[in-house]
Each structure stands twice: as structure tokens, then as C-alpha cells.
Image (cartoon, rainbow, N blue to C red):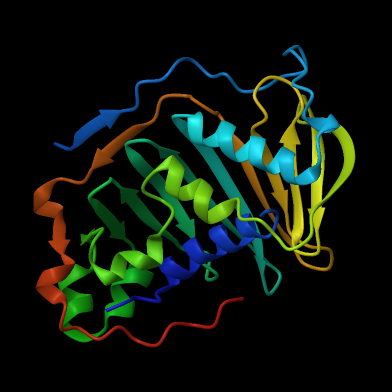
Amino acid sequence: MQLRTPAALAVTSVLLLGGVAACSSSTSTSTESPTSVAPSAEATPNGVQKESADKILESAKAAAKEATSVKLAVVTDSDGTEVRTDLSISDAGSQGTLGQPDGASVEVVSTPDTIYVKGDAFAQSLGGEAAAQTQGKWVSIPTDNPAAQSFTGLNSIDSFVDNVLTTPKSLTKGDQKDLNGTPAIALKSDQGTLWVATTGEPYPLQIDAPEGTKGQLTLTDWNVPVSISVPPADQVVDITSIASAAPSPAPSAS
């Protein structure tokens, strides 16, 4: 069963927007990483702007995969309504909220083995008795369960990078500018624009949707430690116990 729920669609919007450019008693774990090494205007120039567009992209992907964590924010437009998703992704998994077109949000916690999802939109998408059973609860989805495919890219830095920083058919270098205090160069394609730091590590900093569309993904707090809090067992329903429930048809993506 592959769920195409509102929550899953929010994840898809994160990955599509990324791909356009290249584009109580809970258990906690933390990534072991240094204090933020986010690039800044004072950092040493890395020289990537002298390389070809494809080479800059490869450098950005390599730098991102060497990182232990990153914070992302995605803002998209749904018929004039701003939809915002905020996630922290690390080697230990991810945690955050997925914005929904109706203004609500769905919570998600991902570990290397399990994805936990909570929210009315997700529960209602399961339909019937399953929705009642999971209302107000976290639903746990083993990563080897087909339903987890809807959340691909959120359980580790590597998988996120592989899903977001894909390579378009044509990629060119664009302008350089100061982006929130960090010098950066644009990589442009007909699918959007990726901004890469030209000082410090060549981290990807921002992804802009193509002209004529609205959407932006920002990447900050590289290597800042992230705490992943797994929901208490008494607040979790395993999706395998409701596998017979048929999800309702997914809404159309806005």
C-alpha cells in the first residue's frame, strides 16, 4: 500500500521543489556534530564559482553529504494560500511539520528504521475505522513498508540529498550575490535555481522555483546538532495493524 495522503503530498512538494534546481516519556537521540559551520561572509572563499555548473553541483552534493544535519524550510503557494513546511534532517533521521493546503499541518518524525506521522489529514486519509483508530495518534511506518515510499528522502542526509539535488538536463551558472549574509552563486535550469555558497563549504543554501511559479526552499544550520524525539509507545499505532484500511483518493497537488 502506497499512501498518497496530504502529508505525503507535502513531502513530494519538498522533493519536487528541491529537484527543480539540480535540482512525557519519549526517547531522544542526537547527532554528534560540531557547532554550526554554516558559511558566512567572513569564511574563506572556496573558488567553486570558477568551476563549471555541473562541477559546482557535484561539489554542493558532496559537501551536503558530508554534513551531519541541516534545517530546511519550504514555502509554496496553494491557490493564494501560503503553505509552509519546516524540517530538521540529520544522520539520525528527521523531525518537523509538513504544511497542508487547508492551513493545518502534519507532524513527522523519521528514524532510519521507522517513520512516525501524526495529523488529522493523515488519519482521515486512511478512511473508516482506521481513521478513528489513528485519530490523535502517531502512525508508525517501517521504512521497508511500501507506505514509507511516500516519505522517501526524509530519513537521512544522504537520502535527502539524493532525492533533492538531482541533475537537470541543462544547467548553467547564473549571478552571484550575498544570500542572507553568505556569498553565493546561482545554478540555473528551466526547472529552477539553486544557490551554492562560494565561501566555506559549498553548501546548497536556497532553491527557487521556476519563473512563473511560487516556491522556495531554504537550507540553514548545517551541522547544528538535531534531537530526534520518538513518540511514546502508548501514543503510536503501527500501520501494519491497519494495513487492510484503504486510503481515500489523494487530493490533487496544488
